[in-house]
Image (cartoon, rainbow, N blue to C red; front, side, top):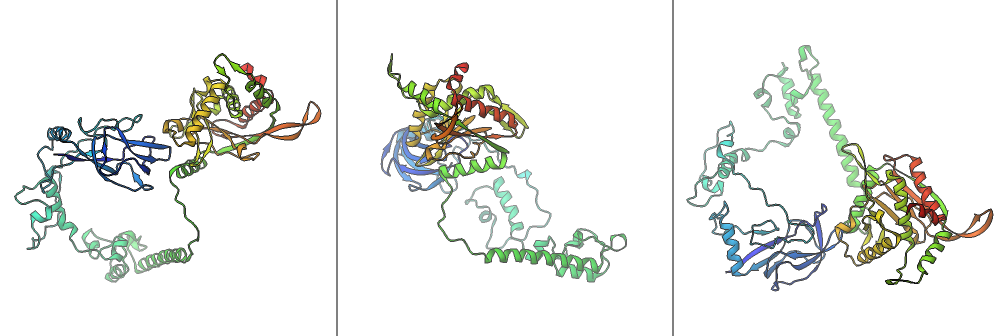
Length: 510
């Protein structure tokens, strides 16, 4: 007999808590094999194909295309073949809950979250993310751990019995959970407290029950009770802290003022018209970008400096590199301007390592990072993403150019993995492709700096004492003022500009 197993949306890594269903790869009734991709989901990081850890027939799907599901929500159910189902049942029967049912004759059904015992799944929920740790065993509550309330329990009525109130089946002995449930039932069934008394923490007669209060006049007690005031919260102005009528009246006026202020705020907020217009949910890539930029502005005290640089020599050097013909391995790959700027940045970071760091706010420490993982901003149809060139400090311009091209194609196709989108230590943002000259970049948290590059455009420029038309670019550096001062940031930016104007300076760093 086949057994129906439930497969839940697994943890996709990088702290992601939800995913949007983009496309189902299987239909109800299809036969799937272990680790076969069954659905394509989009997270805040990338597009991911989710494989199923079971083999069998799909009996149900949960969620339509475009719906968002939290991690751990049911994704689909699979009817496993009899041999595998028997193995699963045999494995489950060896656990501590073997032979126990829920009172209706139905056994406990294992869930497909990738954490079940051996034989339920392949354990390969998502390649590259591993499987989750086994669920912790929950200890049973002992009846002795419960302390009965001091008030006596009400007499049972014909409509309620210990069996029905505890939710037990006929003939079943009471358990610890049922003991707690039945003992706590009288407390929940008690008469409700009036709203005025509950708001102020005062119940009629509670003052006398909890001990003496410095009040002599019963009129003062009644006045406080009528207005829902707790005499224990009122400071008396009489002798030895005696609470007088004037004290209660003063407390009443204060409470009335507070209530009127609250009602005024509520009435103003209710009377404000709702702004008309289209509402677009911040989710997916757009939501992740919004969260990260907001956190950067909230946590990082940033500053920006910029400079114009003559990029004529850099463009000439690039033309010479790309016009070198063929090498021993065939055609020489083209080198992009972004790759040359990235190579200049790695050389500058070796001179100014303060900008290749991060701030540990909890420990109040600056952490200088030994490797440069260079991120670059890429605009795609899905929004702005920042792929990361790993170990950029150990690459030459040709290697960086090839990696940037590969990651850019993957970004446009929506195939970047979370590992390719995280771990950056410094970001290069080429907003010149949008036809603009300058910007004030927002740092990609938790990095310490970002270099922005504007368009390279012909402008009049004083070159060697004469006015000439040169290729000019504006460079903008936004940096975390906690990791360095303006002198360090200015030195970094000036070195980058010098290398742009005189690429031969890079030979000293090779």
